[in-house]
Length: 135
Image 1 (tube, rainbow, N blue to C red):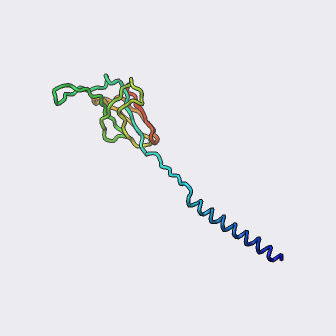
Image 2 (spheres, rainbow, N blue to C red):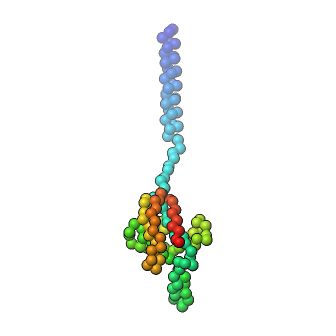
């Protein structure tokens, strides 16, 4: 009689273990997966200043005049590029002109009509916006 009792207990234990193993494998296949993405590895540079001070008058094809608020920016001694100056009167979130730059440490030089206007060293992180204020 003891043999039948232990055999019944062992059989019940094995059935429960099998059900538990099946349930665990079924649930693990149905679990939700999460996906994460890193931030884009760029930063942004904005040039702010008094646009009446940093403007160049050019003529248009129609014979009129156009006011350009552009400066030349040199990053780490590379080739300069033309950048538009955002008005210092606007809030930073309303600025139209932002330029993508690499993250990390940079030496920035800003020229207007060949004259050095600003020189600064910045450090940027991913998706960070740095503002260069012109005097």
